[in-house]
Structure formats: C-alpha cells, structure tokens
Length: 291
Image (cartoon, rainbow, N blue to C red; front, side, top):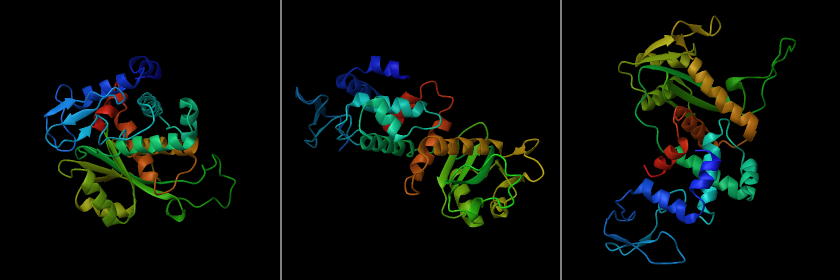
C-alpha cells in the first residue's frame, strides 16, 4: 500500500480505528484483558473507539496491547510511517522519517523502534530443504573497492570490533538472522537447531571449521570460497545476498546504531526479505501486530 492509498483510505483517526478493528476482531470484538466477548461500545464523544467489558468492568480500545497503545501521535501518521518503512528496501533513518511526517526526530525514532519490535515477534516454522548458513559482521566503514596496491589492508571479520550476526535462509524461502554472542561450533549448532529442521534438510556453508559441529546433526555440503563461489547447487549466494541488503541499510541510511538496538534492525531486514513476494506488506504488518 503506497502513501497516496494510505492518505485516501485513512483520512482521520476514526477511519484508522475502524480499519484496526476489522483486522483485529472482524465481527467478534472481545476484551484484551480477560478475553470475554461480553463487550459493548462506550458512548464517549471525546474518545473514539472505546469499549466496555461487562465481565471485568474494564475500558479498552483496539489499540490495547499493541504498538499503538497510549500513543499521542495520530494514527494516520503511524500508518504513514509503517507504509514508508515497509516499502523502504534499504531502510529509513529517523531524520528522514521526521522530515517526511513533519515531526521531531525523537518521536520518529520512537515510532520506528516500536514498528521494528513488532517485526521481531514472529519467526514462523523451522526452515527446511536446502538451507544456507553464514555469519557476517556489521559496522565500521565500507571497504575500499580497490585494495590491490594496499600492503596493509584493514582487519576483517573476527579481528574487528564489528558486531557479529548469524543467519540461515531456506533457499527460495524465509531467512532468520540474529545478533550472535557465540560463533563457536556449539554456538552455531545451537542457533541452527533453533531455526532449522535437520530431517530431510541439507545445510550449505562455507569452509569455516566451526560448522563441523553442525555437520554432525545436519547433512552438510561445503563451498570453498577460495576456489569458487558456486559449484552446482552448492553455494551460499542467497544468504550473502541478504547480508548485502542488511549492510546497505547500515551504510546508506543509518550509518551507526548501537549493539543493544541491532536486533531490531536485523529483525526489520528479515521481515522485509520474508515479505518480498507479498502484494501488500502494509496489510501483512497490520495482521502481525495482532497475531
């Protein structure tokens, strides 16, 4: 859903709340506090979309328990922010969002982090089939394109202070990536067990010896990058392509974010990749908010 469509479909707070009620409840409104369906609309001209629960005597609205709860920012701006973020392939800085929505940068940053947190909540079923696994390091400045004349190239990988990220991708399907705190063999195997099904799957990795531990559980095929980037179906090009999107967001839009917030940015990149074939990622995001 593009910005023009969002403007036309959701011109005011009432239209936004009506849409969220359809997504969350359809025709079956219930209390988010006790789960009772013994509810009725509250007649309050100053507060749109309020409901009363006759079971627990609480008052609520469709925003309760969501990223929009208790917000003072108009829902139309939330909807526009979601539309901008889900359609920005290389992400969006809080300064750019603030300019686009005519608001201050701190409010834009707050909205972005809540939206990214909603993107983190669901990883789905275990990956299956041909699964590519790899790790990367996020941070610092881009390497120069030509270092052939440089006798002292900068450190790479584990020799740097960059933040390690590990990921696995189902070839032609979903990706799962996380900030890594353990890139030993046991740490990588623990990650792969949590996101991938070893039964009937084939694990594609590079020649990093730490993946030998995973080879005891998964059928494993290894591509030696010193010799070739692909040998038939044996390659890690899919996960490498995902890493390039993650890093383009860092270099092109954000330039820096702390390790404590990096899971949110990695989660955003995963969500967008997994929705790459969706005809309406805006609607998918709204459904995920209430999943």
